[in-house]
Length: 382
Image 1 (spheres, one colour):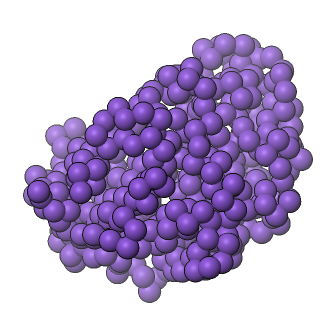
Image 2 (cartoon, rainbow, N blue to C red):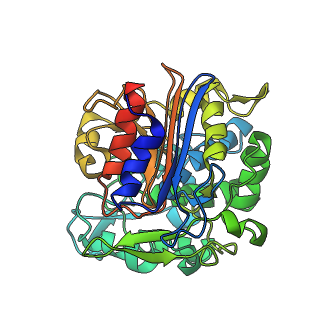
Image 3 (tube, helix red, strand yellow):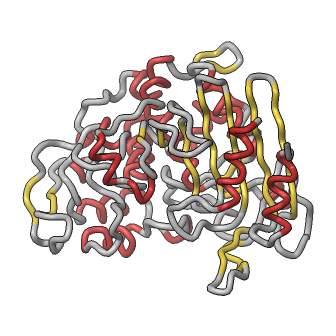
């Protein structure tokens, strides 16, 4: 059987990625490999503590923070979010998903915290990105690949969101991404603390996630990887350098995909979830909150409609949940997600397994690239 190093190295050797780090853990047995370089020029070798833009594996972290506020009694799952987000207090909905943005009807009921946590608030990406209401998410909110310095401040962002009609009635459909950004604003307003401060105080500091945040300080830039996308010929072109968009704190800290982190930092978060919300003997979340996060919240029809992103699986709070073994790596109950910057992280409570893969090549679409699938196959076989 090949090892983790060789699995990752094969994708570096064929030119798919400049480098990658991976972790496969079951209980106390942890296998880690770092291969390739931090950039295409080979400036420095990839290392276990290299820092990456983790994109959408930010989502489970932010969902956990929302559940902390639920446990604090500041919000409740079935509360209308309009109490804290008045911009969403009286939403309108396009008459049909393909309708013009001025062909709307009132929402049948308020958007709740549960809707936002389960990505069923009515805003977000369906399978068809060309729909008029979806186009406004790109043009007005800068939804899409993370570009932190280009997004408006939270109040201005929420104002723009309030002028975009919902694509579906609250609770009716799973839609990707936007709900996680709404969660970030909800956390800040309900807690009275900026999102970066709340996450640092309640999650990152207790878990020892010392390299996780919305910016990379100057004294850590030497560990920060460069970020690339492939051109039409497959050559890697630079999207963001270490001194680029993550070198200063953005005005909009994105709960959908704004964090940077390391392999061991996300592993610390994963271990907390596997320990039913406990870290170092200190409870951060209740077992019930972890159970809700990691349990599929969708109906069969909602799962089917989300196939472009979910590939037939379900969605909990902030991450996907495997509901069937479609591929060798799918284990019912596996929870986690993947990020458009080339990242993936999952836990499986039934086996005590954590798998984390961090690379620096943008995904070309919602479908997981070969590197991820090779990594998952390896993790399922060991």
